[in-house]
Structure formats: structure tokens, C-alpha cells
Length: 250
Image (tube, rainbow, N blue to C red; front, top):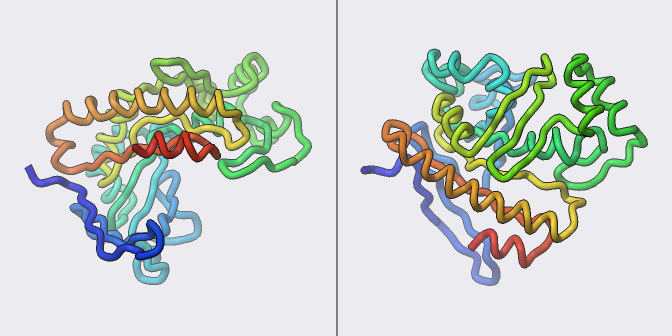
């Protein structure tokens, strides 16, 4: 079976580990290193689809699995022919796993923490999200738990910021949704960690991400049609700890 996604190295640095290459997908090539444009809900704000290629020169666009699951729903996108057809993105596409929401609705919820550093905004754990328009059910869950998602070994329970409904993401469920979205490159389900987390937390999350990655691979292999059309990427974890990141990469 021909692999739907392959990587070809074109050049390597002589004095370091730098490299340039090409990711080949069924919807086109991506020259690396590349800037990936984010279209969270299958659209890039302020830009028409044709602008991405004609003026921006974009090679690949990333959509958010969790947000598309909530609105409009992955089934609708699947019926439309997949992400490329739904968004009219005539280029390679990617979907994340929902793992970023594990961070943004979990450890970072209401604390002014980004993936990169803490932003000292001086706001309480609940005041900031409420001002952003959480519904009453989500507000109650946040007050009870201090966050909008709960993590366990099997997966993550999310509370929708839209209507307070409860949703369960596991590695298998994430891959199922990403199969329906139909992007060229999917991401294995992961626990996106806070950059401020200590080493013990980063190690625990890294090990859990590795276990979820194995389950993601198994779930992907069980869908032969998707296996012929979509590639699956893993996630390197370990936070700011070089030894953990090296372990995760290998």
C-alpha cells in the first residue's frame, strides 16, 4: 500500500541538525520548514480560501478537532466531502487531536498561561472565562472543578464552553473524529502540558501521551480507508526538560 504521507529530506546542515525537506501528501507537497496557518473552525479569519494560496502563499492549513466537533460537527464535514471540500482549502490540511484543549481548558484555564509562558493578567481563575461568555452550566462546572476538563488515564472529559454539555475524548474517539474530518495529516491524541509544570508533571503527561499514541496508532490501523488517505503524526512532550523531550522523541 502506498503511504498517503511521506517525508523526503532535501538538505542537511553540516554543523548542526538543521534540515530542509518536503512532506508529500495526496493534496500537494509541503516544503519544510513551513509556517502552518491556523484555521480553527475551518476558516482563517479575514481571509478567503483563495487568498491563502494566491496572496499568502500558504502550503498547509491546520483546523481544530475539538472546535469542529462542537460546531458544526464532524459528521456534517464528512458529508460535505471532508475538510478540503468543506473549507474550500485546495491544499494539504492538518487536524490537531483535541490535546490542546486539554491544556487550554485544563491547566491553563483562567490563569493567563499560554503554551509558551505565563501572562500575568492579574485575573482570578473564574473571572476571565466568565467575561468571555461562558454559559451558566460551564460556569458552574468551572467553579466546582477550577477548569473545564478533567484528565484520567483513559482520556479527557470536556465541558462545552458553548452549552455546558459533557463530552468524552479518548485516543480512539479523537482518531474517529479526525477520520471523519479527513485531513491529510492527523495528530495522535496527547496531553498538551503547561510550560510552567514541574518535572514530575511533565514526566507523567509524557508517559500518558506515549500510551495514548499507541492507542491512536491502533485506532488508525483499524480504518483501512483512512489508512490509505491520511497520515498520523506523534507529539513530542516533556515541557522545558531536554532529557524528557529527547526521551519522547526517541
